[in-house]
Length: 389
Image (cartoon, rainbow, N blue to C red; front, side):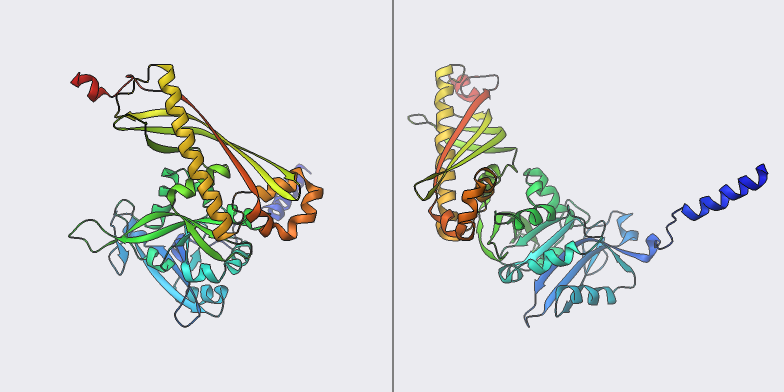
């Protein structure tokens, strides 16, 4: 009887065991680390993939695109993005494996025509990876980035992701963030890249450079760009930045002081003044003096207060200019003011949500920046100036 029960349990366990019956061996897969999406000259959609060459990765070789490197790039066209991707698969001897995909690059021409199709296709793909880095190539094509090698990385698609992490902007660059912002009251923004000629005279290589943010309207069409400083301020307002740097001059003093601002926080309060929306934006952070090339002695508390005030005034001015620029030029809410209205004034939001574009452009936004300098270093004034005295 015990033998019979043991056999019964054994066979029942086989029924509930889940094996990898549909899995593919690694040597049957084409591992894609980067994808690009563009509009070709004839108007067709163009999808490209950057695939690693496993035998070359093991040897640490660099370069790619043509031959002899760690990766190669393949391209296909179609009437829509899915057809283009399927045509790309038809060019490969192995099945595309997208679970390791690190980056997606969107060409400017496609971004201007709209990226709704990109969101639709990726969200229907079980291998999509919602934390994939996604960005726009300013003034160029996405495939151009895939074909550009990067000296510090074996596979170039890793470069943009790591640069975002260096700038502490990775949270703003994921596909998940794009889906979230495209489905609420805010408009979307994505990181932007440019390809610039190398500064090395002997090199004809194009270099990847962070170019700020690409701004999309509610129809998910590209309407313009913010430079790096503007992009940082926008991410501070949307709570996607933890630190940034500022260099300033002190009145009546020679030289400059550089400050790193950390622990960035924001608070948004909205109200109505008559029929006009009023926004109170408060930004806070802690400062650390990184360099002081002035005779300003920061061991004196009144001197520190002066630096704090200068930092606050400079940041307030640049943030006011950013908000005014977006209101008048791009007319799209990339700051989340509409989300705050929806959460805090739901009944009033119902009345204005259909006209939010107009309400946003006319909103009165008050900006208040509060920075507390916590660390000044080991010396008060410039060490070089102290030595000269």
